[in-house]
Amino acid sequence: MVFSDPSPAFSICKDAAGIAGNVFAFGLFLSPIHTFRRVIRNRSTEQFSCLPYIYALLNCLICVWYGSPFISVDNVPVMTVNSIGGVFQLAYIILFIVYAEKTKKLRMLGVLLVLFGVFAIIVYGSLQIADRGVRWIFVGLLSCASLISMFASPLFIINLVIRTQSVEFMPFYLSLSTFLMSTSFLLYGIFNLDVFIYVPNGIGTILGIVQLALYFHYKNKSREDCREQLIVHTLK
Image (cartoon, rainbow, N blue to C red; front, side, top):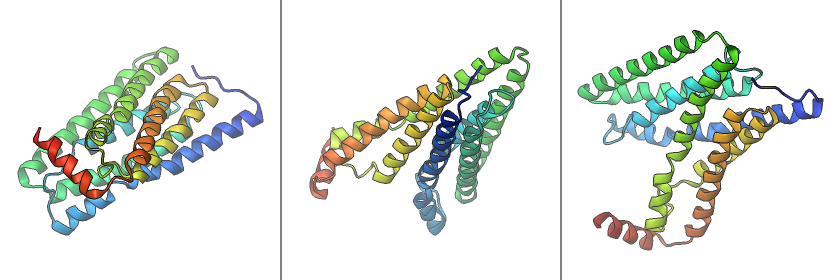
């Protein structure tokens, strides 16, 4: 189980890190708004995919469950940030379904039902584990794996930035929000002595640093050079 240092200073630092993580997470949650403004304006989802939002919703649900009193101790910031994130992701998914073509609507509704089914199985299955410590490890491993895979998703963008020498596809504020949120929850996990929080967020912090370093390295490249590089590498 998770045991926290009882000292007031330690507790204050932990709470401050958790609150900061919740605040910085809004940068991530709000980042797709530009995309969905375009969807609403054009009344079409065009070539956009809903799967990233489906996966993000599942990740939020698993992390909410991990932060709940049924699984871990004193992890309220984990519950709040992922509850808010889940609401945002569900709103994006609903907008996608509303403006998608009929075939996409049915497919996404089916995927959404599968998602809730998978989450229900996770909740039910974990509650069947009588030993609370084993239950914590089981759900913790799931949430850790989910977070690591989510933080690893920018690796494609990092590779694209290096190949094209362009930061056009890696918005600065999104990278900054990822770094700040991950760092906050890295500290929160350390203060709470929770390996399932500080390990994935430590990885997220490292990837955030890499993204910011690449941004500042390539930001002065001209748009013409960036587009030329993109065309060249796309044709290869």
